[in-house]
Length: 423
Image (cartoon, rainbow, N blue to C red; front, side):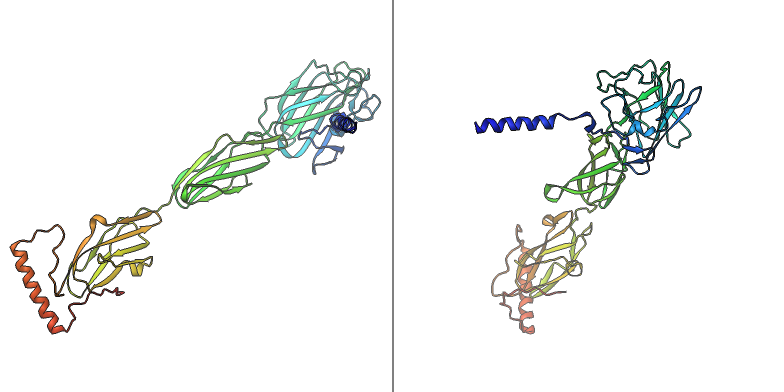
């Protein structure tokens, strides 16, 4: 029984929520809510009515133009919340808003049931940006909008307009309405904006400055730019966003997609278009090349290495071939390096250089460094070399020279220690 009571109570609450009186409707139009001709919920907006007098006098509500835009709907006749003008007067009613709007649809509401309260049968709709020069937006004639059983009837009129205006005017005729013409409400609508944009450029080198131009239609009043990019490590992340209409961004290396969302009082739209911006790092992979002052040195001997690589390397890794290497990001230390060999043998030296574009190694450009000197053992032959008779004679001669050098220089020719000496 308790559960049945709860269900019944819930049903009553739902009914209370779903049954909304006409006067509580919220209209998503660009018309401000007026309480007088110059007072509304939008600062600076105003409404005015004038007449083209033929004969007769206007009704008591004639100059109260705001009643057509007060968004107050009456349920019975006799209420004074309608805009009216007497037969056979012709009238116009002008609405000004402090921001431009693109009128694409409007609705006229008939007043409460009353035999003498008749809607105007014909009218024209105009737009202007200065209040002097007017563009015709729509023409209607032979219209019959009536109210039955106290329920406001209405008629909507879509128009093919794409231009924004500050001023909107209705020129209203009276026709044969002897009792005058009456309008309960005029509601003006604009279509949600359609988002679109153009970048001034889409490719270049880092840092790449790009300005985006909003080309959206239907007069957006709010913008939301989203930038999504592929960056180092192939990681996707949002890099930046802006609420400006025509923003500028500076892109570093990577591939980026850009989308735009725009909105106004009528709704919000995100561009189906997604523009790409492709930015190269602006740095080229270095090309390795280097020289030495000599390739043969008497034990212990010093070799001077000089980097002549192209495309501006920023890091150097020298490998001297005897198991010793030197790594630095200092140009003063990496470009010119000296190394003293204290191991006898034939050593293949190499250089690896790098920058933000990557690294490159001189594997195929390695240089053989010959270090000769007496160590109490035969000098190993160079790799992939078959000694000739001349090589053997030359080897014996070098051994003799090494021995004489060791005797007179006092060098310990059997040492196998190596050290790196800064240049």
